Length: 235
Ligand code: PGA
Image (cartoon, rainbow, N blue to C red; front, side, top):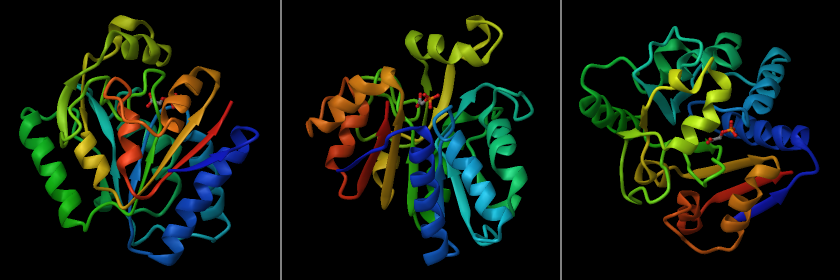
């Protein structure tokens, strides 16, 4: 695992955006894996700025998001569909037909998840996957002790994640109790992964990653077994 320590959030965001921009420039029809949460917001802003300056073109890019709450309609402002539209998609020329996010209103979550993995496969796999990390070491909604082999699936949120994500909702009761998430197995198939961690509350997770060991109680540590991962972090 390559480790990059940044002095602040701005530097971290710039690093992430530059890596995505380089990937698009070297392979215009690349497949990108996007994440939600507060961590990637700065990087998405920088990607929008690069796009506005004509430095990058998303017209041939395909994207897959890591996860979506379940159940939640795409119009709900707390859905990850809405988040991606607000923070990135409505500002760039990534064709709507090329955007993939698990369907939060499907009546058949198992089938949706199976088809999601098939779509990733058909697109040729993810060239660059961005990940945030939970305070408890989760990636996507793969919570502690998640199966290391799981593909995209429906899962329950832990109480800690409900509490942590409640800051975006009016009350913890409104946080959906389930999610559709790429599994650790799907994430590990990405050709390159950047995991971004920002803030003091992520430092325990960063320490666990830096130890180089794999501990299923800290799901992100499985990335130590992936050949091309960059951990970029700041306090
Ligand atoms: P955050 O969430 O970027 O909002 O801290 C990351 C995560 O929980 O995966």
